[in-house]
Length: 246
Length: 304
Ligand SMILES: Nc1ncnc2c1ncn2[C@@H]1O[C@H](COP(=O)(O)OP(=O)(O)OP(=O)(O)O)[C@@H](O)[C@H]1O
Ligand SMILES: [Mg+2]
Image 1 (cartoon, rainbow over the protein chains, first blue to last red):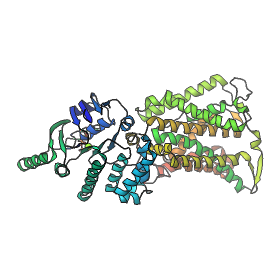
Image 2: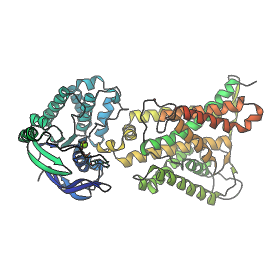
Image 3: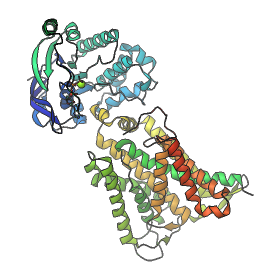
Image 4: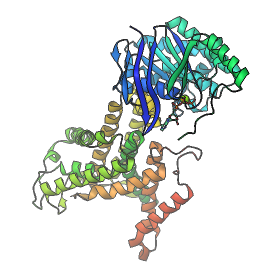
């Protein structure tokens, strides 16, 4: 039984299809990158898994539990956590409060405190500003906070949507180092949206290429990046122009 | 000669009443983007719960006969209960609906409650006497202040401090603040939508009950229309304060109370009957100058 099974799902916004008949599997402890041009449906895919948008067709399972039709909070309670596109931290809450929002689903009060200290140890700047409003953090710090906040639910599967968005390359390196280290430590399964195949290749893992709401390619991230580079050398841009946003 | 201490106590107690009503509206708006126009009817409902249902002109106390130590928690619980019940019966089914549809449903719900009260109690205002001793004046700083005014001011301060502590220090408070800022994100972190919304309605209903107890004591009247007037002022306070902002609602509640008392005191005698026209002119000026609300940082982005 795979960790996450997505069977033939479709997502549409009104009449506009964003995902069409998509099937996908994720194994325990795996790290998978989803790549593809703007509007390919990457975010819609993650949002369908976490229950943020409904599927019009198909089913999604995690550890044999059916996720389809469950509320986002019920899915979170099954051990799935999300770092959304644009981070969506609670700007009016303090840094520490942001970390605590997701702890309501846990019973291990002691472990919550040690986890918070661990996150502050991993991201010292967050520890220094634990009582500051999260809205005042820089983009990179907010990304760290969003990751820390997702970890505080003690997830088995964590999904991260474009963590590199709007960050300087050096900060992106740092974010990925942290994610890789966390995965090592906690045996997390990771599903990450990352536009840059080069970046994915450097971090390592499986890569899935999406386009027009479907999976159009799949393989080892390093191989995929090579192919991408080759295509770019021959045809200029390997990705079609971004589709018009509705 | 106008007595300034007197004015101060009048303004603070009226403002406190408005502030509590405005808080009740802002709490629900914060988590649901709903302006609950049935809030005024929650107030009327709690007032009428004090007396025996009958269409007689003279009111006979029912719950109102209980000693204060029992009566106060009982009415607060009743206010919370009717708010929770209306969430279950009406608003829960409209969560995905347009905010306008929700608002109109709240009007409809208000009519239902009001007409149920009319059917049970008749339309004529009734004299009631709840804690009449509280209207005996005490002398403070040269002013004759009814004890009730002091209690209202004190209650408001306690309610505001208590609510602030609840929001700041408890798990439910944290979840409510997170949900008010970004409901979907809070749910993705396991925060239960139903818990947060039920909590907000319970607090809002209890605030309506507190307003009901104060108004019943102060006016000595039970009238189905009494909630509607407060609701209107409280709604305006939440708009001026910045919809969804709790500190803004409190501040604007006090501001309107103060403006109202000051206009009453200092307008020329001929103009006093038109006090409300002056008051609402000030409201319009406020909204023209700061449409996002007086107490919201100018940079804050709109909530909806
Ligand atoms: N809330 C929405 N309402 C209507 N259409 C939407 C909505 N969200 C996404 N879409 C459309 O669905 C399609 C897929 O969008 P999605 O955000 O999933 O793509 P993406 O691969 O994440 O793109 P990006 O790289 O820009 O984040 C696009 O055509 C987009 O315009
Ligand atoms: Mg996206």
